[in-house]
Image 1 (cartoon, rainbow, N blue to C red):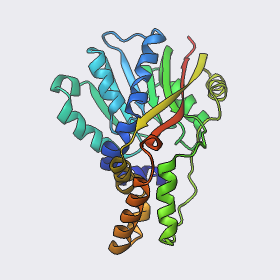
Image 2 (cartoon, one colour):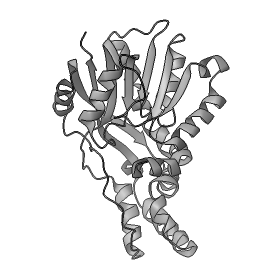
Image 3 (cartoon, rainbow, N blue to C red):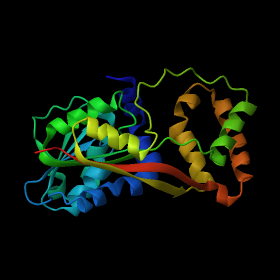
Length: 278
């Protein structure tokens, strides 16, 4: 199991409540790309959601298209457990029966050649260790003429004042942050042209990409809950109870000093698509 998978195992329930809903609107627009590219979504159509996480895209697909079947694949068993729990609580039994969960890395899918009609992916291909290899593997499991559609982040170093305010609180406490291993991941593509070129090199035709933006308005309390309940859990685990309490107080005070408009978050995204040749 990779370190990335282990991290998401630990964060699965927090991801579902703190981070997944933030980018869900951008994630679900992948299905609009599927429609726009004319993919078949009738009876017998098999969707593959690569890096399904807690299942938001898989759930929306079975709701939107009543006769498709969906395979949700993820390298984190914890995320799949959370997805199955959420699906059982929110889908009808008939819809839940059309989703199958598969524990697998994006670059090594336990599926036959040409096993799926449509592959989708949201905010995953920046996390894989080798994006070209993952794209080639997705191409392998797509049937000839099958569509891949997805979204990921674009490289973006635009500052976000609430994030800076939280970091300033950490600095004020003089906390020695724990060393973290270097991420073994592909990272965010630098441009739409760059990921479209990767798709073509992986063997897709009619490959394209378009820049967009994900937006979210945080409240002060909501952002602090996100930092303390998801993004900074590794840091918090290294602190004493007293240090955690002081950090929360300092961060809350710094966030309270920011104007409401500073909590309007946006991040560059790129939607991409490609077709496996006949």
